[in-house]
Amino acid sequence: MNLQVDIQNASAEPVPDEDDIRSWIAAALGEASDDPGEREVSVRIVDEPEMTTLNGQYRNKPRPTNVLSFPSDIPAELELPLLGDIVICAPVVRSEAAEQGKTLQAHWAHMTVHGSLHLLGYDHIDDDEAELMEALETRVLAGLGLPCPYLTPDTTVSEHPPR
Image (cartoon, rainbow, N blue to C red; front, side, top):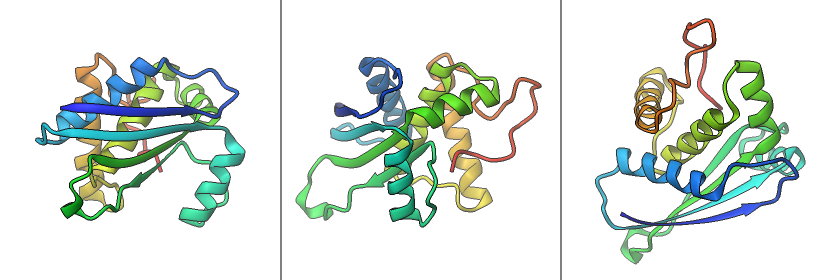
């Protein structure tokens, strides 16, 4: 797979290295898709005000969230490699990692993988879809040497996936 990732950092927070972000996306796309062709993804890292605006506009939830994905709606017959856009809110990722007792790097990887899978059409609206998506996220992260993102420090499964 030939992957092009455009990363825009509009956050005042410290963020992961761009090579890490690219490797997390490549791992997700490689595990979840058989398409060896060219792929293009845009990632925008934002702070809470911008994420609040986007989440309000696109999901009618005027509060910040950890990650939003916007799959491309380019007609298939155009055969363009653009999968879509991922927006990640750095302050939310930081606070969630601390609340959940996870390393910041592991949570960033999870949110990036999660957003990438949404671009491929995976979702967690119903329980069956959520189980499939969570299993795939866990497999991708394990391949990166990272722990299951749905286990908390007391080793119980968390109640819900990122929304």
